[in-house]
Image (cartoon, rainbow, N blue to C red):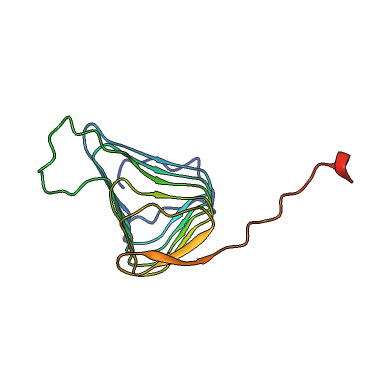
Length: 146
């Protein structure tokens, strides 16, 4: 990550020095505040990878929006990889192109995500499949409802 300025980030928002970002000349990676990316993660963006706020991405995770085989023409209009807010991704996971992982979801270690993951669910396996629902956090109400 030589030449990457991460000065605006706090200790809760951290990318290890061996986190790798491979971005095509037409690609982009957007990462929200509070997101933590652990050692040896690899993010490949031919077009776009979006990672939300307060995500936890473990070590040896690969996130890519391309097959890397050169078979898709330049005008191929595929959807970005989207990881919504508060997602946790376990170690050794692979997130493949055109996947959206919904808010608050958990991806178990060693999973290969080939399809969209609904919000507040746990998925795991190869390929990843639904394992369980997660209780949604109770929203705080304003003082006018007390």
